Length: 194
Image (cartoon, rainbow, N blue to C red; front, side, top):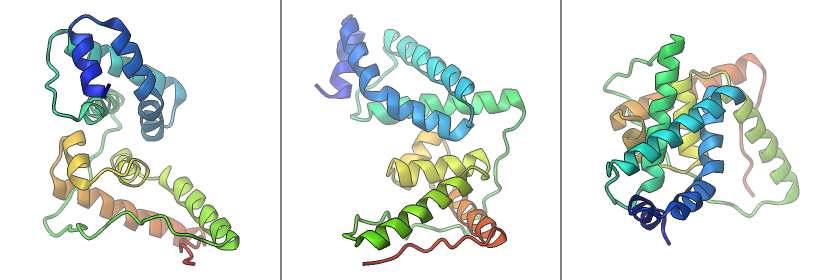
């Protein structure tokens, strides 16, 4: 059964269907939350809040079967994260101007690499992940969704409740900030081909 079919079964009273949904989605959802908030305890709280809200919405019939249960759940998690940031008074949005256009960004396909190149690329990716921890939450979130969850900018915009231009702008600022951090720390962020 698809996630959507399980959601419908749960709304019709099948509690086992929700257990299966939780089992399928919990690891990815928790990883996303932890990546954004950087605190295990906070991530656990937000994770639980997300599923309590999802259960409540499902019981009230507020889930429309669109084939995007995962995106719907991510949206709930995103809102819970933003609510947490507001409560912590740490929520800062990056101003985005109209000229931010990163629509030509695409995720790279997996390349067949020799071992030496693979090791170099592994280190670069570790450096990128480490640098991402210094980004503001909104930028870190977009990078995570784009490169680790392979979401399109349209899906990111829908999930985070902002325009595509804002998503693109956040990505642009994230890349600028990561390049600046790499320069300041003498880190080479060039993936090897071949």
